[in-house]
Image (tube, rainbow, N blue to C red; front, side, top):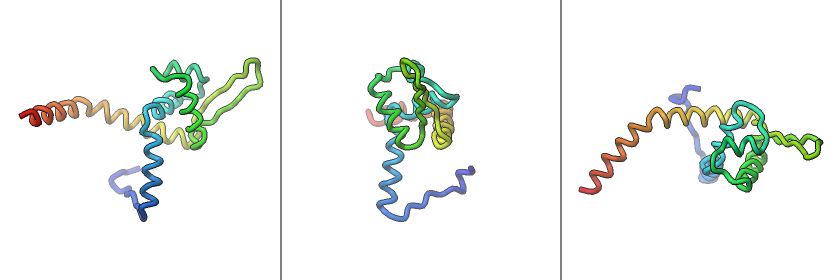
Length: 127
């Protein structure tokens, strides 16, 4: 998709609020790391927890449930003892993961430039 020709058309304040709500879902601390961890395929709960450094069991559970509710993640329970549960991205979740990876690459590419701008700004503010 050529982003130079793509335009966001917001026709009402309600539409703007819906877009903001959707974006805030992905702007929390854990959603994108969980989505990116599932980008390469199906994982079990503890595998995701190991991949996403610092996430608690409770927060991972909440994040996975929210992603499942939004249609981003599919949860499959296998009838074993104990039950085996697999998580995988849906096609909608895969499309989000692709955008998250691109955004991460952009952040890595421009991190030093952003740091330099921040340092210059902070120096100017001290003067």
